[in-house]
Image 1 (cartoon, rainbow, N blue to C red):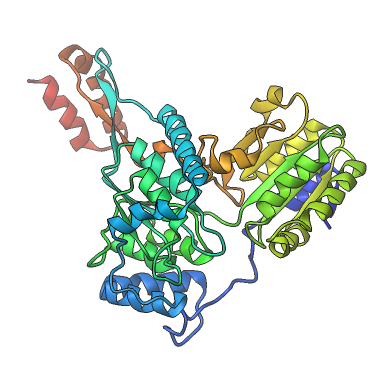
Image 2: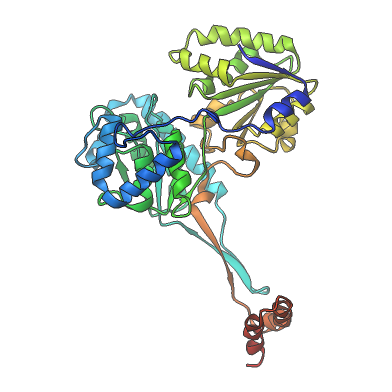
Length: 437
């Protein structure tokens, strides 16, 4: 079931140059017949952005109808529809969403930077939220209500004045009630029943009914990802996300059933998901594979999960936990599960990961839904240089200078000297003239 890789060197060679899922086999689309030729994700995004900029709502409506089969007169979901969505959920489901929102808010408050000032040094930083944020919530095969909480709540905690959600409409012309209920709980300011590259384009350039925002966040399809990449610089984005991935490190005493459950939890997301096991023996891998086979039969999304396991899934066998952590360092997984005794003492060694999950009780599923950190995490090895989405992403930290006479006098001559070292005389004079006052 799982392709096996034996030894640290083989694993490092396997993972050192890994690309995004689908590299070399790039899908193409003509936008449901909107365009005469089939386009790569980047070319499609470019065309969609240009057409949304030129034609506004009319093009968004046209391409949404072509791709999703939904013809909406108004994209914005009425407030009464959003508030009524809770009526279609069980009370325990509403309570679970509310608990998740509370914990996410509590965690995100801890992440916020604060303004500061050093009067003696004459400098400091001031923190302000961005003015507006658009959260992309996928449609697809599962109503990801939790993603509303994991994107909109951090933005609200950061103090963003305007937070909207874009998410595809269902067959009835409205987003899934679970998604709308989460929007109500997160207190988003508006919901637009639009998805795909056209939603990203609308948020980036603005249309008659969908306002331009300063920052776009959230995961999505390859088409959404391409559009986010193309609009970066016009607006801010949180990251470029690919299919989900998890790496589970175990030893011979680890619980095979729990390990298999964690791998399947990610495998059921997407046929391109990457569930990776790192074990200390082939026998441990055998035990997990037996559990995978048993548990897979019970899943409604068994076909998706099975395809992921057989496609991008793998089992790495190494000689020690230290070697296992070196494999994780190379792979830089979105999720790193440390399912062995004593893992808490090795947290500092687990450097390259979007999120780290220590021990059996701290399963990745907890962070997916209710623990507190956002489940929007870097994929494709980008955990080497980026972090999980947090309230920090929605603020700007601006340095300022406010020097008194003594501080200025102590450093201004050095500023002039450095300016002349760089042969920038006007810079030097801008410092000199202040000393002559």
